[in-house]
Amino acid sequence: MDLNYTTEQQAFRAEVRDWMRANVPAQPLKTLEGREGYDQHVEWERKLASGNWGMVTWPEAYGGRGLDLIRWLIFEEEYWGAGAPLRANQNGIFLLGPTIMEYGTDEQKARFLTPMAKGELMWAQAWSEPNAGSDMAAIRTVAVRDGDHYVVTGQKTWSSRASFADWGFGLFRTEPDSKRHKGLSFILFDLNSPGVTRRPIRQLHGEPGFAELFFDEVRVPVANRIAGEGEGWNVAMATAGFERGLMLRSPARFQAMAKRLVELYRQHRDTASPQAREAVLQAWQDAEAYALNTYSVAATVMAGGHIGAEASLNKIFWSELDRAAHRAAMSLLGAGAELRSLADGSENSWLEGYIFSLSGPIYAGSNEIQRNIIAERLLGLPR
Ligand SMILES: Cc1cc2nc3c(=O)[nH]c(=O)nc-3n(C[C@H](O)[C@H](O)[C@H](O)COP(=O)(O)OP(=O)(O)OC[C@H]3O[C@@H](n4cnc5c(N)ncnc54)[C@H](O)[C@@H]3O)c2cc1C
Image (cartoon, rainbow, N blue to C red):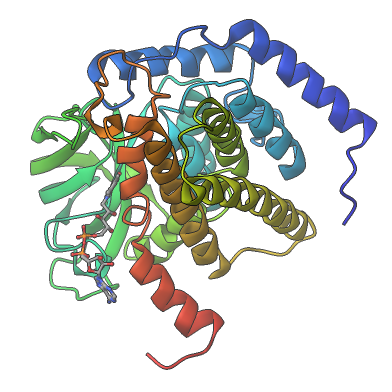
């Protein structure tokens, strides 16, 4: 693999850098987990789309630029390097978008992809149920066919930003008596449909981005089903692979964070413990290692390969790196760090990042489950 950038790639980098320099908000936005901050982030999504930067790897026909993964990585480096905001529509563009691209009909692609790239349709993910988190095959929310509609009844939980999003996607039991992975379908639904109730869940920092969703005989058109009836499990596994694999957590996000951490260390050098110094160094090295690994995976995918269970390695790596780096930051900031206020609204505050990093080993499939996958599928160990 050639690690040098071509002239075209460098020109592309300069183009992204110029645009970000001119457009990234000077003041950090308020947290994505509160109403006001969420709206600010949606505005940012639309600004990105106005520059045609909503999702650069998507075909031009759907609001993208048709670029390859290397240019996506360059885009991400400039994006995070410029201190640009978190993506409010990450569930849509990084998870559902690729799923529709692979499994959707032409009609579904035309209907959903462009509004997603433009930031006009914001998405929540609805897999988890009260008794079906790690064991997702235990879901019980039913979608019973009635002509050209499904009638959905049941409950989902832990749906990130479902308090504010427009639409949701999830798995539903379309054969009510089916067991485990069978009889499930992947269905998109309007969160404002009659019969949907969103109950916000406050997080550790008090913000209500999460929601429980209650479905009381909600009518959803059959046309909103992705792939065949009863084929939902395989489609959902592909979506989960996108979540753990390349797209959701690009290395640039962690490289930018590691750079800020080194800066923080410089400011607190006099009081930093040797352990904190080690942790800063380790975080910086890990972010670089993750970037190199991602370039290698991108090259493999571009050569026609695909990411399988290796996505679980990725997921464990970025979640542990994020948590360790934020712990280092908190120890540099000293005893009062956890008592600071988030009231300044800065999503870049180390405290908010620290709180969020604690959830990294849980969401996108808990790390214990990822270790099971690695043991069974990559190492061939017995169940
Ligand atoms: C920040 C955040 C955002 C999230 N966003 C969403 C979202 O948008 N949409 C959505 O649907 N869900 C979301 N979730 C929910 C998340 O997917 C679940 O929390 C996760 O899958 C774990 O499920 P659970 O909470 O039911 O824990 P459980 O499944 O009850 O697990 C509890 C513990 O037991 C361990 N465990 C369980 N089974 C095994 C096993 N077989 N072997 C070894 N260990 C095991 C788990 O790893 C975990 O440590 C989010 C969670 C968080 C924290």
